[in-house]
Image 1 (cartoon, rainbow, N blue to C red):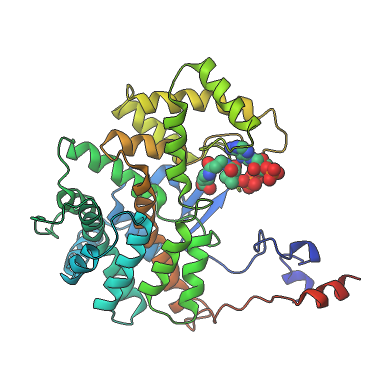
Image 2: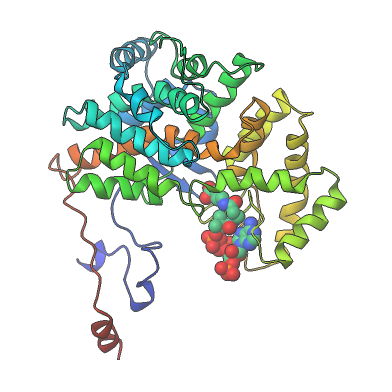
Length: 388
Ligand code: CMX
């Protein structure tokens, strides 16, 4: 590598840091900036938040927003791909009901792959995306012991409507649920190339495992509490706060910090201002459920926590992140069990990771694809000798 081409110099200090900050590739779907957060194909996320998930999936795969005609054709294409093989019900019936929903999701994706894989990267990615809404609905129903009399899937509906009608949840406002889920999906579809679940999926695909095996691996990565499962922890945290009184919330936050526990929903590895995905969800909550008890708690947390966290100069970003509001909104529309929250995150990410896998396998290196991942690990003694 010539000096002109040098992006980064790897030193001993970079070893055993989880590749933190080490450039390893280019990403065609999204990037993250400290001020505006994630951008999909150049669009700041705040500009895309009100679009339908199908149009944003089109964007991630085609790198441009669809015209009205293209949007219709893309929906028709997804409809054709939507049929979920009936064997999935049997698989879900056999899983332990107390297994974590993220483990169910990973098994569900693997099962779909075992029932129908074409071997074509883009075909398989789009087939899986089209089948996710029904699979998500079946996951909820079987895990909650509601596996009987599930209504037929109607692929002519939108992706979110297919999930909601499969779910058939009683006593909820379906239109409100659809609005909150649509925004949730759009906000969570992609987040650059190097986050753990995306990187893991692309690494698995680089060995030419199937799209399904790669995305099941991504879901396993996402299930970790330091990664996607933080959204579950965040609502659990909000429920523990239990009050929207500013003084009591401040005392709670200080107590958590003293006990060396994280103040969930605040801070970010890259962003240095409030995550626009949080801003969008706060605005949505103010419009749809301003008097919801959990929403009132997060409204107070948003006022109080950044001020308290700013007292610690080590904390690079004391502001709200994406997870602060999503749980309160999901809870409001009837998803009161936070253990399911990461499955929504996973459902959304299948689109972004799927698009990135297609790019790495069929576009990078002039279509040859990125080679099998093989970063270098040094033997410990060799490392020590090298540093002497
Ligand atoms: N509560 C308590 N401590 C925090 C904190 C918070 N919200 N945010 C940062 N810190 C601490 C870090 O743990 C770190 O402490 P050590 O030096 O003792 O390790 C120090 O402040 C510096 O951290 P940083 O450089 O500002 O941020 P990191 O990249 O290390 O961590 C994150 C980022 C998200 C893990 C961290 O802010 C955090 O733990 N937040 C709370 C959990 C949370 O909401 N996670 C969801 C993240 C959503 C997303 O990634 O989009």
